[in-house]
Amino acid sequence: MKRWPAVVAIAMLVGAWGLLLSLSHNEEAALPRKSFSELPMTLANRWQGNELRLDQAVLDVLKLSDYTMRVYASQSDSGHKNIPISLYIGYYQSQRTGATYHSPKNCLPGAGWQFVQSEQVNLLVPGRGSIVVNNVLIQKGLEKQVILYWYQDRGRIIASEYSAKAYMIWDAMTRNRTDGSLVRISVPVERSAEEAFAVAVEFLNDIFPLLSGYLPT
Image (cartoon, rainbow, N blue to C red; front, side, top):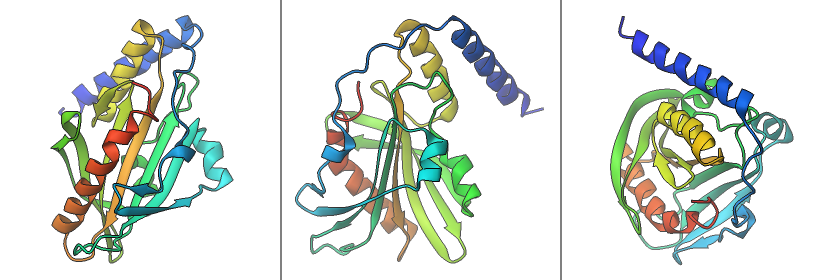
């Protein structure tokens, strides 16, 4: 019986989205934003990045408007020097026609990763104050990773997939906008999950102030 509220909520979202599509008009013109190709490879004078690319077959499925996928490493003399930090941001100018971000809860298990722990955490970030993001520990074989991820949609920072969809429907009807993005930071667990989490938060604090230039508010 406990599953019924979630089922009803999903059914309502699907129904509302179907109604919206039947009544929708042209998306608001694209708001000014920088291309991810302009995102600095060197962050805060201590993180050095390398660009990666997705396979064309994956791009055909995701139907992204823009994205970046990089691996950064700290160049400082801290205890986590050279720990690789993976950054992925997938941006959609419009999600009206079915092109939308894929929840890590769906795509990671499909790649063989198992969710060991999952929670939402409050973090303080520069220029924004408190935000809520997802903090998950995943494992494949002997390999473990800590992942922080959230949806950054039209100025909102959203942890819940259901809330992200609900806000998208509301904004489509009231603001004529459905643009949105998934931001994901991944850090391998080398000594402990706590250390990997701390590294991920440190990186998040350095990159977060830059994101508003690439993700319209």
